[in-house]
Length: 203
Ligand code: ITT
Image 1: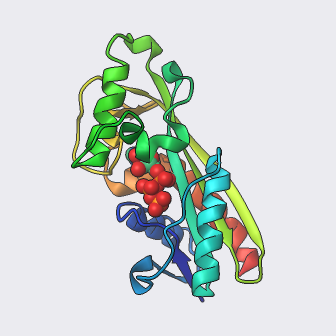
Image 2 (image 1 turned 90 degrees about the vertical axis):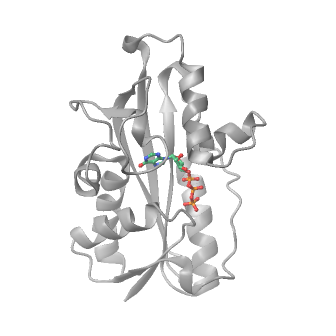
Image 3 (image 1 turned 120 degrees about the vertical axis):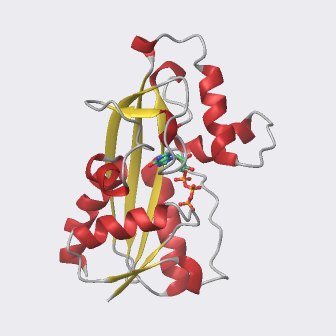
């Protein structure tokens, strides 16, 4: 069987493919490349789970295939859980026009935490993973990775806020880890391994 990944984030695709492959799922997992007319789904829900379901529903309907979506973000303790579901659009909220959106978002968070000491720099990555079948069957699960934010970027791997995020029990940022090391502990790894379990009985 074939599953389509309902994401436009090219950095998420290999992470999702690797996690699902490692979970031993017997399905071909494809990106949206084959569907240039797939709708761009506005993320209008206040929760990760709600937005993941919106994206998966729209792509299942468009393709007629089981669709899997990720909605994720960074919750910063000192910012009362922001940027949260706004993580991909955080700098835009403050009217900043950015060439590299990921970099602008990261730099804004660093600015917002400029006066925050190390012991108050706790944060967590959250991912919701949703599956929607053409039949209408739906499921959504979540994963969380706790850690803290450093004050200067380190590492070239991953994407988004990875260069400033150090998971609990680690000294490296997730941008200093290999893809496999990150997936083993990440919010997306946890969520998609859970989803793979559910998919085994659904597909
Ligand atoms: P799609 O909606 O098309 O999947 P997107 O990038 O807009 O792509 P989200 O709305 O889920 O996806 O936003 C996720 C943002 O949260 C992402 O752009 C990063 O800024 C951040 N983020 C999520 N997971 C991350 C990770 O593993 N490492 C670093 N940053 C991450």
